[in-house]
Image (cartoon, rainbow, N blue to C red; front, top):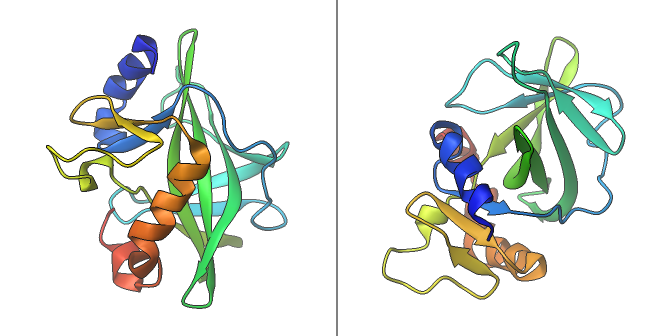
Length: 176
């Protein structure tokens, strides 16, 4: 992973602690989650943020006037407990540098201001035990971040290690 990507990750540590990052986008074509805007909700960062369709993804306005909007794209990862689970890729920009961070999302039966509500969570790189070798396709960058070097292997890692969590409503509400 390029050193500037680590710098972007470190700038975003408060928001993205333990995140999986890539220095290139891996979702080639995003899947719309709904028609129109979508409410992206995380239990540890209320209120929900409204994503507006933009191209094959969503744009989320920044809370800070000087910051650029965030772009998200999704693709279906699996189904858990009868509910689709999507893998999302968030584009992170800092000056002339760009990195992509990964989240998972699933629809709920609720809405926010008329927009379908999606719960979001961030699988944590820190779940890969310290001192253990990361699985193929993932490289530990530092204590806070892992580099996704093989996207297909990363998807399989998520399926192998989070299947039970994806089906557990408590996991989605615990601030992952």
